[in-house]
Image 1 (spheres, rainbow, N blue to C red):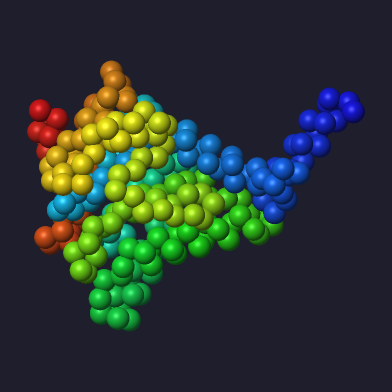
Image 2 (cartoon, one colour):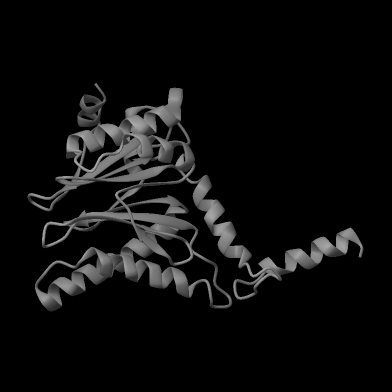
Length: 241
């Protein structure tokens, strides 16, 4: 067979999300995962007294306002999220679960649980892997928080609708390097302060000379008051000393 014709035949399988390749793959889903790997890094760490999220905002120009780059999201007072990949896709998903959290509060007079939020995100992502005319969400999300019973949880949602619970996880371009750091240095009895310092040091080690305080965001939810808190640049500098 003509090599050019072989290439054209192979390319045809990625033109529709509903079309499987001969070896059983949905190529557009795989492309979405590659998009996540090219996104700026984000990580989450569960600690004995809360959960920490750290994200690299990857500032593309000196003329950009760093505070205007959105990488951290408040789903509810007790739930935080961050993303890697196409951040505009993440914003659509976050808007949906913020509304679900508000509806839950009005209906049941209680805070929504993390698993309900994660399943809502994963269900919408999954629908976009089986419906013609759609494309998969090109984003992975880390969702962390503290439940009513005080349990501290961190979930990762994949572009194709799967979700996993982690003690510590990383997504984005620094996934391989930072995962190795977390595998080596993570301990379940870390305090929030130690978790923040570990997350920052891992990002700093990955970015090297490109690291600066303005390009990272740090958010935590502590188990005592179950409140979403974002660190200022000055607070981040103190943590790096």
